[in-house]
Image (spheres, each protein chain N blue to C red):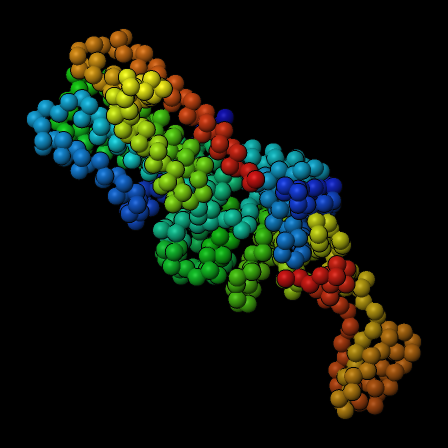
Length: 237
Length: 282
């Protein structure tokens, strides 16, 4: 299989040009920031839960929601078919279409962390876990975008997903009362928060490999679903 | 001559509805092939099957000698271009930026943008944002994008349907230029004049079947009643048969200076379509 970075960059470049005129994406990207400012101002040392409420919101709103909207718009305007019929491979198109959301998510998370004053005890482990998590949310957004036909539909379909992955830690508090919700402990956002807590307590990478593995399983599963759905969407029903 | 498209017993069902029943035809390399039929006759479905956007229910649909499903292999993508009803443009980008993206995807020099925009008569509009273009202009930008990589085979689904006569002529000239350079063109249209002007051969598609296939001129001759109409100077119209009797009568009108004009009564492709299918082309 050949891979053309030129094609990936071409799609990314196109999305960057489009971004300055895309108010929908720009406003979604800014949404986690007021929360970060609030948490940063109310407490001198916000808890890990507070930091990760903002970070998970950035995942849900920027990585998942923006990505979903970008893909849904390509479908709504019939431009995705043009890409699919071009010599660009599935991997090149999906990579190109994900780059903007990845960059925006990283920027939002970095600004949010600066605003809330988050200083991880081990930057490398936390950065690695956040970076792997971004791929899950990007894949989730891509999947939802492929399943919808318009931006309007995408806005509706992402709501429950944003609640589950953005505010999953609230659901975790309910697991004692509702055991059927115990699955939330394995959600990538909960695993990331758990990992961050452990890291803050001073553990090394060997002690958090299980959390990293669970997040990686979510990434791989989501990527497989994306590729299968993408191939199906390349053919009209 | 080598066939670039081969379709045999092609069938396509949507739920319980038959879109294509038993379609058979081939397209020769280097020709402009017209696929004519009224709306809903299966023209777009055929293009989508031939360009790997739709699976056939049954039958053979070969393009470049391989089943159309193989066109998703990278090497084939550069060999064809397609314009259908599900083609779209990036509305917030300029005409130039839209084409630039496709230059990068197809590994084509940016210089080609100027050439294709000239072909569709849109050079002055290249810096305009696509959302500000009229429907006809959008159609022309999409056409320009289709030509960009100078494909071996071009699938065009009603390419001039929303264009005025001047711009249609520009497109027709552009298509002839491409064809002269060796591009095979598969053109669907319900515009019979367009088909007569451009196509080397035409197929009439009706109710999911190819009803007739031949060169436009041969079809007109085949369906002609071998008569001509002579308009006389006194306003009368006389129908003459193409035989000895008719030629004698014609000679008389000519030699006595009574003849004002003469024309053949060959049917148009539209007339032939109605005769064969009993349907009008809409």
